[in-house]
Image (cartoon, rainbow, N blue to C red; front, side, top):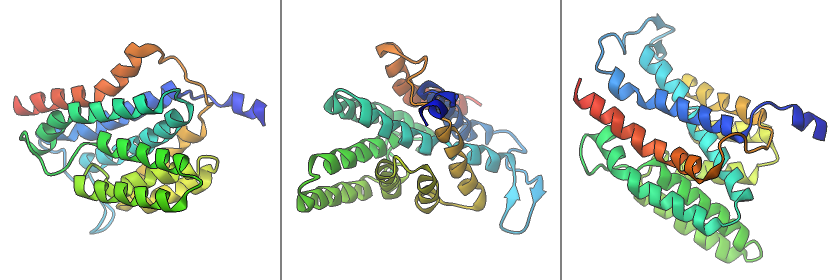
Length: 240
């Protein structure tokens, strides 16, 4: 079994790159929408499913969140300082809020919050589950508080996203159930569901090694890509 694990080709660093690239493809629709023909239907299956470059772009983008959720569960398991890990997520949630608002709402204040808040709340779920493993009442109480907070914040992917992260952690040794649970939490039209489930191909090729992204600079560069790329896309969008 150990020999088979070593043959798997994808490190955590490769998964991070796939997540970043697919997220960028997804968010690029804010710019590409400015070009005529981007939403033109070039393949009509039926009245419900009409394929355009916009749909393909968003479908590829559905790969990103399951990868980020998986990487979060791996980070939670292997980090030496869970408090610092949570603090980093919260700080970047605050940093990302204005770029998120500008790109998605075109204004400083927007009714939805960015995905770092979802990741932060998912991390809190895992922390509560581990810390209060012997106290079911406190565990359920704190998980309920987190769920209500997720609903109140209205962060990207919302309560379903937080639930998905927690489910990924609970099923961390069971990859096939993970895949089917993902379709329950993150399902959309058939294309989006296909995109979500496609994320489990690289996840199942993960070799449990960190890979080439090492050191504090690249660690925080990975975090910073999220707000920076949204700000750049917003500026391009505004100047087209």
